[in-house]
Length: 191
Image (cartoon, rainbow, N blue to C red; front, side, top):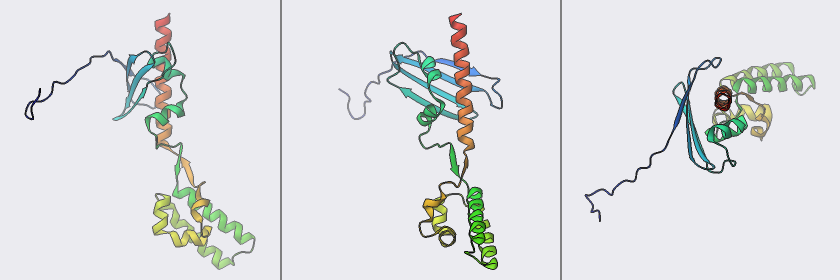
């Protein structure tokens, strides 16, 4: 029986891991993939590229599938959700918000909601939104301007102020390269 000063004996399990290094993917650095089939229907994958790593474990893979085969049959967006639940294909854009605000000012000017001077003032004020890093930032820094431009519940009207998320697109390209390499390897093993 261990005492306070005597550590308990640690349990160690050994498993077999397959490591792949993928090169030659267009506009991507080398990709390292670790595949581990833990038991039937259970597997783990770790993908690394340029200092970033993503990992996923599946405890309910389809019958007869290795982790490599299972990974190849999954949808890219599903995998990204497993790798990073917070990552979205689109992200907030101060540029898009400024464009939308200026478009709205011009539309309302054409409908005679504003005079020429007021429309010019609001159009110029909307330019300040370009540097906004997030909707949360707008609640403090530019809340008054946003209310003036979009109304009292302006945060509901800014859902379209987005642009493609380059981190999502990057991870999507990595996953597609891994799937292609794993498929090629499976075809070579089968031949």
